[in-house]
Image 1 (cartoon, helix red, strand yellow):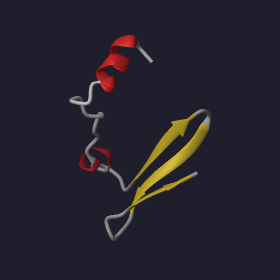
Image 2: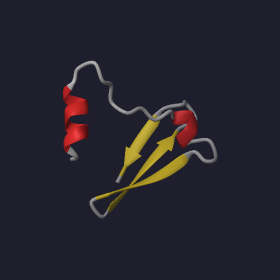
Image 3: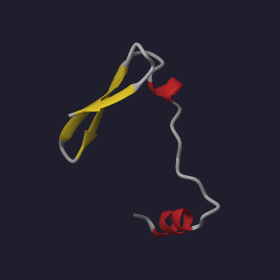
Image 4: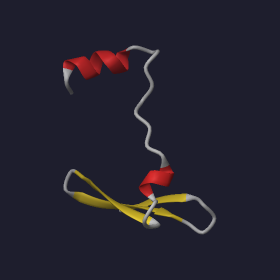
Length: 54
């Protein structure tokens, strides 16, 4: 991690980055996330819940 980012997150006044679910699911009910060569799917259910599967 970049040293300036490390200092940023070490400061308790700074919040973690936030993604709005409305932006993620604006066009679809499911998004793919690639992490270390593995694919995950984040899905929005009919009950407005989030499910992450591998």
